[in-house]
Length: 119
Image (tube, rainbow, N blue to C red; front, top):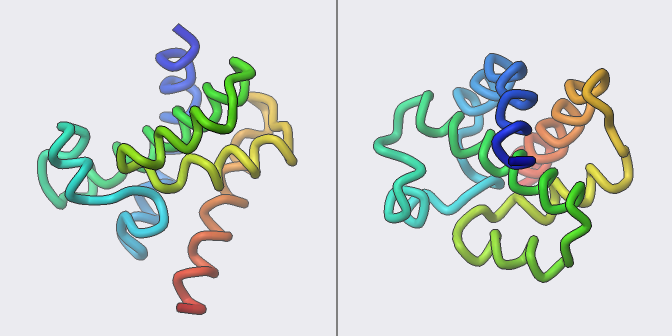
């Protein structure tokens, strides 16, 4: 239930996430092939990529809020949601509320964008 509720919270920032995905794609968040294999992406459209990035945010935040172990975060990464541990790290340090979720999402997107530009 927590996971599904968090989808509604993160969906508020869909345009922001889509703008990021149009510029940077999926890299830094998830493994494209695994996401297609597991049905999280149907194609390489902006909508599919945005959906996967949102899913990574939801998985990371739900694991932290449910006080699950770091092994759980690593399990999500092993199944293709590579960005889950990084997102969780930001969530743990920032401790955003619903009111400042946008600031949290911005911080994660900026971090990944900066990493992509350095590479």
